[in-house]
Length: 144
Image (cartoon, rainbow, N blue to C red; front, side, top):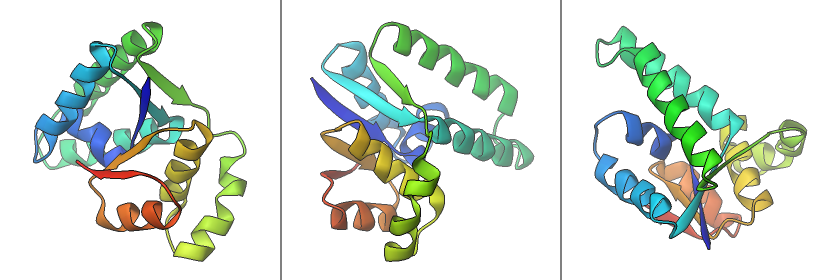
């Protein structure tokens, strides 16, 4: 089964209607149809919560309600084995060479490392810089 790593920008689009949301919804539908398995790390959830909080302060959404939607869907999908949430464990320390080599944030380095660790077939992102670095690191990248 194809494994797709979703970066935080893609994950957020599942719960916030914005450009790219339709593409992310289609990926989730493929997961529900047992065509693909989706992968994120624990870091992505925390980072998504930061985005939801920021959007709440801008009056775009209610953060707690959106976090509940995320939590409920991910719990269901994990239980059905359509989704994997990877612990970050020692990845922070392992991220240092990537941070220094590509001048990226620790969050982006952890996303690349998670994709590699989980042997994902595809790295899905909306982030231009992250896409470029992931490609340089040998990942199969999709601009969704």
